[in-house]
Image 1 (cartoon, rainbow, N blue to C red):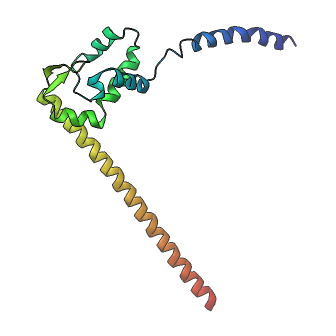
Image 2: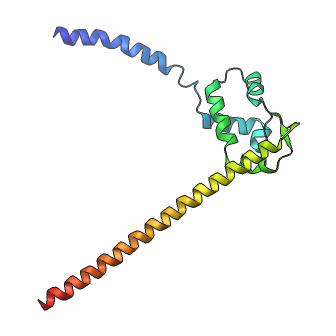
Image 3: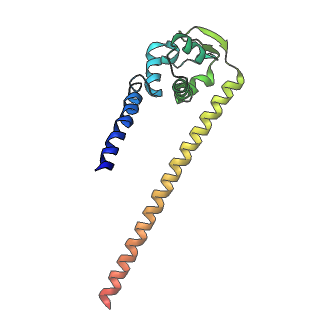
Length: 159
């Protein structure tokens, strides 16, 4: 019984940190929910405009309570999106949070966007080809099995 009492006395300290840990959880934001918030709040995100270099510092100035890691992940999701990369391929100017044009987009950055898109399209094409090949192999195996079964049935009747 003492071991049970000991375990009971050890449980309250274990639950206290859990409640302390769960207290900041509602304030914590996922990168995707932060991105949705940024898209509703700022034209540059909503319209997928090429973002100014150092946009993270602008965000922190406007929203100092932001978790840096969450913000960087959200920015990565945004700037890695197909729509953003397509805009970056042809973009001439970068934009601040409010959509104000700023510095030029360099040829290097445009070329990088093009390269990432090409790699992504190639990867998708390879995946689809592998899928088609797997289906074709599966169908060929099924047809072969059917023929073998037909032959086995045919010869088992004669024997």
